[in-house]
Amino acid sequence: MTVGVYVVLLLLLYFFVLPIGFDSNPLLVYVLMAGTIFLLGRYLTTSYTIDDTNLVAWRILGPRRMPLKEIRKIEFTAMRDLSPTGFFGSWGYRGRMWSPYIHEFDAVYTDPTGLLVSGGPYPLFISPTDREAFARELSRRVRSFPGGLTVDDGTPW
Image (cartoon, rainbow, N blue to C red; front, side, top):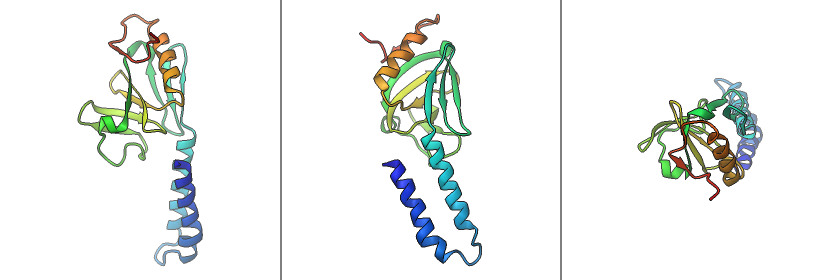
């Protein structure tokens, strides 16, 4: 759905706005198209990996690493539950959002339902394709570090 919206926006810019152009600045249409392509690229390249020491949420020009030893909570949630405020959260460059419930958090996601991983200075909202399996694997790896989890929705039992 999201990719379709980006494609429709690009087609509208190309077929309807570009032929008309802007009298004062005709390059503005190309800048808008380039920005839309950049945001589509960020959306399509979003991925999540767990290595031996870090959870990595990656996208073009905006990766976020969270050391596994700092993770204290793994919770299933949705953006709607967090009630983030501000336009520049998911669409912005950094993905830093503010919630009245958890205050500042980072969001690197492609779907509004996902995992809220808390640890370090800012919690991280991610949306892996198979969130249950990802939460189980993340939980398994985090439990191998001392400290433990206070909330663990990834526990298989």
